Length: 258
Image (tube, rainbow, N blue to C red; front, side, top):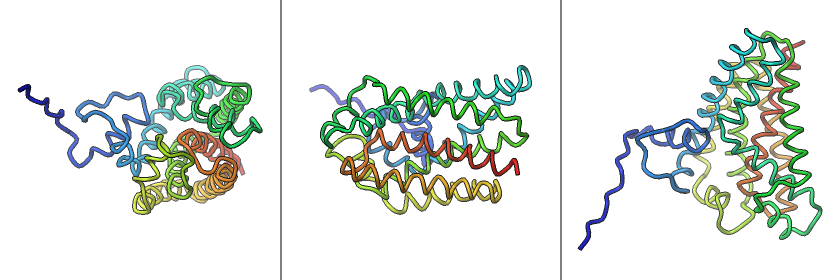
């Protein structure tokens, strides 16, 4: 009788949710974890804002180096390219799929079918271009505190993910969105909200204003998409993250300029 192969050891110990969150949300190699599963990802969701802080730190370092060498315009482009590479385009893919579906003006079932299609349509491409262009334009401003907005944006963007997972129903039976919704509850939301609120408070009134603006956008779009789709999906979570990041950059940079 063949012996079953034991699962690989978890070398992260009690910090495994953080490692799993880094592995899921970024392209950074994370050795020492068991194979990824939908349940393990769901258990790591409270750490999403912390991973957002890691992403923001890497982007600030990238922008500082590029800006010192080539100026503000190149800095902004380098940051946005690094942003997409570091996150493996995870949320950008959800953004494109969501807008292909919700702007198709079809039936609910057809919208969900379009969102499951891996091909990018006209509205998805337009959404990608718009978000990328806005991030570049906002970060290209010659503001000395650009780094503070950039550090905070990925934190609040990933908090918006968790808020929408807990706050709104899932659209479909099965799928990553449904599994997240089934395994994530209020305690996880409290942990993640506390992390995001502390980060925003450390950034001052501007950070708290950015958090409030991102929350308003997430609530409004979440309710609208629930009405259209019957609930949210993994793609809409990605779209909400990307849009919340743009809002944070916009609110932070305009308020810091005053």
